[in-house]
Image 1 (cartoon, rainbow, N blue to C red):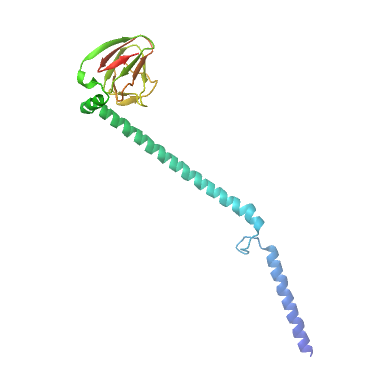
Image 2 (tube, rainbow, N blue to C red; image 1 turned 180 degrees about the vertical axis):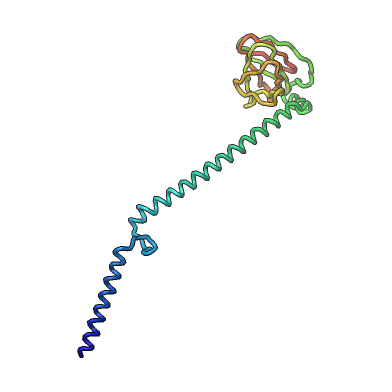
Length: 196
């Protein structure tokens, strides 16, 4: 009988010891650690979610910057290609004759240069395909249908308000694009034009 009581007491003591060890373990273990993989909602909201959001925002910003740089590079390549194509067409006599004929001009057919003197503020509207060389003074580009003058000397396009360079050869790719004199200006024009 004493032996059964001793075993019972030892069993109870062992169970109590195991309970104490387990409760001590849970009291010491950190939530979310490898020892205790369960985490609370407050830990998730205060620690895990902000870190995940920050990582996602950083990755999104890097991706957006990469895409923006790629778009800018492609846009620049496209602009360069368009400028080169416009310059190529502007020096193609057959193309200029067709454009001038379609617009009702005869610029590419005349082949003669006329000297024109302008006062400050006067504008010259060129027929498509007409060419101009500024000999003296200053003038700025006047656009028509969103297009200015093509500089055949350096292969580039002038837009509204940009200055013409002296002795550079310009051509109009659209009807009524031209230039405005900023002061007394002399120019050579080949093709149809009007002064206003």
